[in-house]
Structures are given as C-alpha cells and as structure tokens.
Amino acid sequence: MALVNEHFLKLPGSYLFSDIAKKVNTFKATHPDQDIIRLGIGDVTQPLAPACIEAMHKAVDEMANKSTFRGYGPEQGYDFLTEAIIKNDYTPRGIQLSNSEVFVSDGAKSDTGNIGDILHQDNNIGVTDPIYPVYIDSNVMGGRAGTLQENGKWSNIVYMPCTAENNFIPQIPDKKIDILYLCYPNNPTGTTLSKEELKKWVDYALVNDTLILFDAAYEAYIQDPSIPHSIYEIEGAKKCAIEFRSFSKTAGFTGIRCGYTVVPKELTGTTPQGERISLNSLWNRRQSTKFNGTSYITQRAAEAIYTPEGKEQIKQTINYYMTNARIMKDGLVACGLQVYGGENAPYLWVKTPKGTPSWRFFEQILHETHVVGTPGVGFGPSGEGYIRLTAFGEHDDCIEAMKRIKNRD
Ligand SMILES: *Cc1c(COP(=O)(O)O)cnc(C)c1O
Image (cartoon, rainbow, N blue to C red; front, side, top):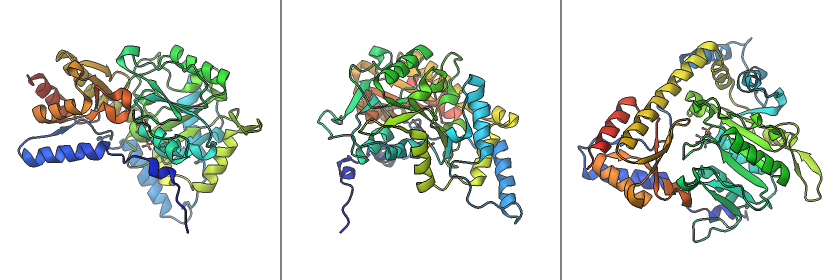
C-alpha cells in the first residue's frame, strides 16, 4: 500500500488561468467575429536573440562529433556559464561570488519550488500578498502551510499586504518569521523596492535569523539605476539570502528552460539542536542527487546572452516590452485609471474603478473591449480590486487595446 502525501490534497485547484480561459472561450463562442487581445499572459512572445540561436546551432554540431560530444555535465552547471554569470551579473555590482555558489538549473520555478527539500517542515513562512503562487503551493505540498482558512489564507503563513495604501511596500512583521519570500521587481504588481527598503528586510533577517528567498526573475527590466538588481547589493545579505534568477523573462527562455540560484557559502540554517549547517552544501547535495544538469546546448545559449551581441539583442527585446508597458500605462492613466508598476517591470497593476471586484472588471473589459487581463484576486486576497496586464504582447495589440479602453464609455 502506497500512502500518498496528503498535503497535496489540501491544495485547492489552481483555477485562475483555466477560469480565465473558460470565460474567454465562452465569449469567443458567443461573439465569433470579435478580435480578442490577450494582455493576461505571463509568457514572452518575441523570438530568441540571434546570438543564442547561433550558439545553440554550434553546440548541436559539437554533439554530432565524437571528439566534441558531451554527455552528463556537472549537476551545478558548466564553469563557462557560471563564470559568465558571476562576471556579468555580480562582479560589476561589487558582489564577489565563487563558481560553487552558483547553481545552474532549468528555471526559477523549479528552484523556488524545490528549495523546500532542504528546509524543515516546522518553519513558519512569510509572503507578500499578492504573490507568485508557486511559493505558497510548494509550501503546502511540503506540509508547512497549515490549513486553508475561510479568508483564503493559510494558517501557518504570514501574509504581508502590498496595496496602493502602503505604496506596495510590505510592512516588516512584528513577529519572527523563519522563511520569507520576496520577489522584486514584483510579479504581479510590477513594483520594486529601493535599496533602503530592501536593506530593512536584510536587517530584519539578520536580527531574527530569517532566511530570505529572493526571486529576481525580472531584474533585467529595471530601468531606474538606483534600484537593486540583486539582494547581495545589500550588506550582510550573503548571510541571510538565497537568490533565484531566470533567463526566461531576461532572454525569452520560457521554452528553452534555464535559470540559476545563488546559495552563498556563508549562509546557514540550523538543526533543531541549534547546530549551524551550510545551506550551500545541502543544496549541492540535493541538486547532485535529484538533478542531472541543464542541457549543454541550453547552457551555451545562456552563455551567449553575455556576449556583446547577445547583451545588445536582449536589451532590444526588453526595450520592446518596456515600450509596450509605457504605452499601456500612459493609455490607462489617460482614461483616469490608477496604474502601478510598468516602469521597472513588464507588469501593470491596475486599480479597478470605483472598487469594482477584480472578476467583475475582468468581465467588463472582456465584453466591452475584448481585452483579456488577469484578475488580481487570483494572486492573493490583497489583489482584490486590481487587475494585472502584461507588456509581453505585440506592440500593435497594445496600441489597439488602449484605443478600445479609451473609447469604452
Ligand atoms: C516567470 C517567473 C519566474 C521564472 O520561472 P522559470 O521557471 O525560470 O521560467 C520566476 N519567478 C517569477 C515570479 C516569475 O514570474
């Protein structure tokens, strides 16, 4: 008899995107002639940079040749990639890392979800609300979330509301939290934390022995030079934080699959008896046991992002999306809507007019303008009264969508 992990049974179905798809399909069936513009998707639309394509072709040819063929690579990633990562993403920001602190993976979703493998079940968890659902669901699976309450919150998770009222800056909790998730620039709100604000969290973590899990999947979208790209720009962060990064949004790798996680050598957790344990060695053990590396071809593609041509090409694509974001933000503000984010992130977090519930506003714009967004409440209780629009669409679609929203009433 195989007993199942019953924690999985506590998870409510993840209905957000399937509910959206259902509503859009119903609308399409009843309005077959209407042209629908999807601004709800969290996936990129522009093709890979030519530098990456070239690198992949070359790597494929190497695989065709006995003398250059590669089999299993290091589980932690090839040195050529970890070196490129350190040299380009960290050294210029004054952050010193060694190769053994960088773990190449197949993406940030896997790593943010799997990190719980090395953490005890009896930790309490803190999340900003709204939130990227992986952080919560993976803790439910690991038995750390407690029970789902009627207010939509889990009993062992501390929710830190991020709303227009606090300018989307979460308040430092007045209690001790063991593990804290921060995602900046933020999905879904598109907002950021300044160095001063992020420093408050690092200081809190150092005082309270909190582990910060910092998701920087959108750092490449930061335009304002004063905003930190890495949590390690803050003094002391190597003692309290793991950083997750991804090439998915940076370079259109959502289908290629590559990211990396930084676990500094000086970072420790503790046993129930109080012995300090290196998280770097635990994660290394976990990865070498359960993961057999990202494909060589993929890692060569990722390396190419850091060539002069690669950097220029991905910058152009990011500019394309950020131009969309600006057009959308200007268009929505001109309609009298309150819009947050969109300046250092590819997401716009739009306050629904007159306190309309997220789903009702979603239906309104679908029916009146045939534009699809994502109801904010789908990302957590504090997302109620907002809708998320992404800048990952086609340029002309963004312009057309704004025209329709403007002509709405
Ligand atoms: C898209 C996204 C990621 C990236 O996930 P991958 O698995 O690397 O594609 C990570 N975190 C957040 C918050 C995201 O929105």
